[in-house]
Length: 287
Image (cartoon, rainbow, N blue to C red; front, side, top):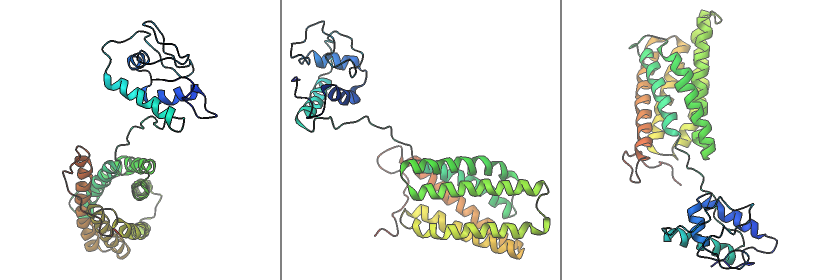
């Protein structure tokens, strides 16, 4: 039962007590009406058949004002327990609104990275024409993956946020460079050297991320280790103008894309039920 005058700790008002309780029930008027017809209002008087919700106006939700005879007994029990926690505990209900869960952005980030890497790598391997990947680099591998990185920041995943944001920026930067090349803003003699420095810089970043990926899981580590080999082969190939190294880098890029696609598929599949569907392996470095 609700007992007047005992809902709040010293310094806490009855209004604050009801505000805290209404966090859980919001504007579900039938639950409130049923509870308060099982209880006493804040004046200590028994509730009548036509009584309105006794919570102060600043805190109470919209009430139906009449008893709902078919009210769920579990609802009533939950409400009484909430109020009892407020009365007997700290004076303020400990439960707060449940924040909606953030979907795992890794599936999008890995998917965007995989598809764009695959399309570019098929060109580097000599299997497909050039420039097909540029639009993908701007929007899927670039913008979508960058957004996945921002959502990883929200989720508190520093590794994922850093990886996806960086490689989203990688793809948008590379696509912008190619646009400058097509616009005649980059000298032809500097093209391969510029690409070599570009890939070398990201290979340095990827090196320490590969080390830290040992603490994530096997699938993520495989993405980074294959990507490391790909970037090393490509920057060596561009610096030396070696078609053979560039093509080999393209084949390793295809493997990298396939592994990243698997990791993305695993995130999606394993989010659909409590028991994992696709294994991703345990962290190699867990201590």
